[in-house]
Image 1 (cartoon, helix red, strand yellow):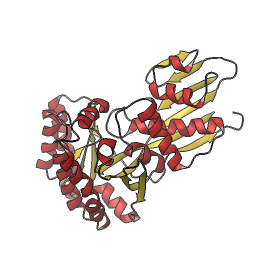
Image 2 (tube, one colour):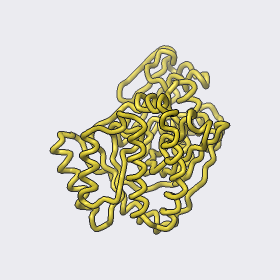
Image 3 (cartoon, rainbow, N blue to C red):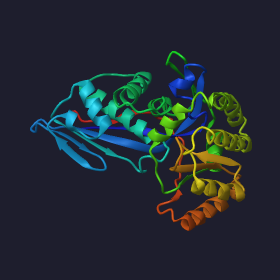
Image 4 (tube, rainbow, N blue to C red):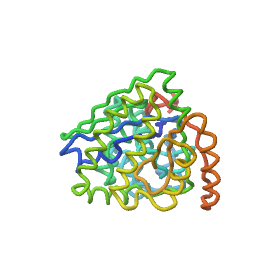
Length: 335
């Protein structure tokens, strides 16, 4: 038995500049941090059965991995050449498609586990690139590279996406007190709705030329946001989130909707400095930075607004930042 995991992430500014149509012409940049919400993968060698089993929100059992409906598990097994005698299950504390990068966290955890299964050793960068290859080249998702690198490396990072496809990873060295202060100012609120990032990103890709100058400003905002965090100027960081969200809404018509806008307005009206929808947009999680004395009031106002909107399952998600990236937690000697 092998158990692996990879963290989910929250991104602050620069999201959307990690797509190749942009970074091949201008450096893309994103600043993000991993949080204490993980995707777990369990892999079991089943020598006395000849099947392949995958258990996630549904259960599949097939004779050959090519028959699997789960695209990431299917393509990963085919790619590494595992065709039978294996069971794979996944577990997560938060629903998929909430803007926390869970799909790429799944890919990183899966590849970490399969590397242990086959006896391969990959460093963080190699795992990140393997996850990019799985999702972009094999599964054909119209996504960028920020989530795979965030999940593989862990921690607080500035990521730069270069024209040649390489990615620079610069750790943001916030001291312990500043990280705790940042956590205290941050609200992560699940709206009770999920969305398909692929459709949003496909529209963004089609609009790259039209939005190129906006994307440049989004990329160029990352160093200034980093400086605000290093100064512990969380008010300015919140204001920059609002500026980034205003720019991001120009990219794609489906990034926001009237319900999301109303929830954002509620938070701002109760004293938040600024915030945004995480991930590609269209649903998922709202992230806000607020003064400490207004935090409880903002959360309560969001809860009431969610009830009024009929958003079942909406609520705050408590989070802490984590340094760990994708890793193997358990590898039985009897495997």
